[in-house]
Image 1: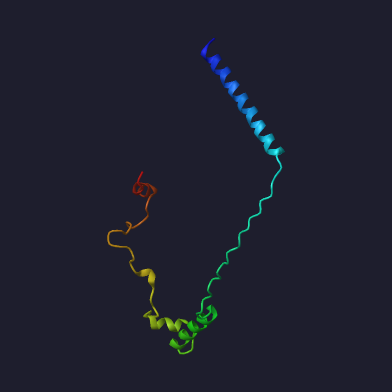
Image 2: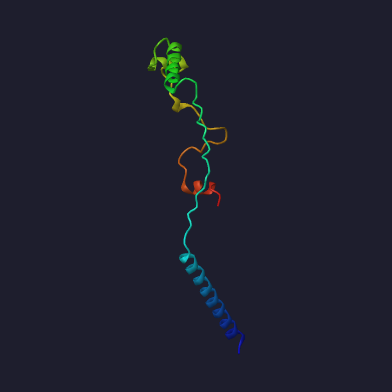
Length: 122
């Protein structure tokens, strides 16, 4: 007899024996009467979370608005006239300022796609 055939024969026999044993175990588990288990354990009391004793959110919000109103002489609305107090002058145009760092400005004129692709690392 060849080893492959013997190996196959042993494998089938073991598989069949395991299936029979599993079948017997399952049938025994189904047939035995179930006993009811009652545990006498007293429930442990759960401590309640302490409630925060600080001011409520509504009170804090109200006090924040009151403080802002006092700092602005009772006026919480802002207009363009208020912007003058921040240092803005009437003719200020932020588009004329050079915001590029030194050496990081693009060359004047149009930039071709080849130049852009040359900057991207491959």
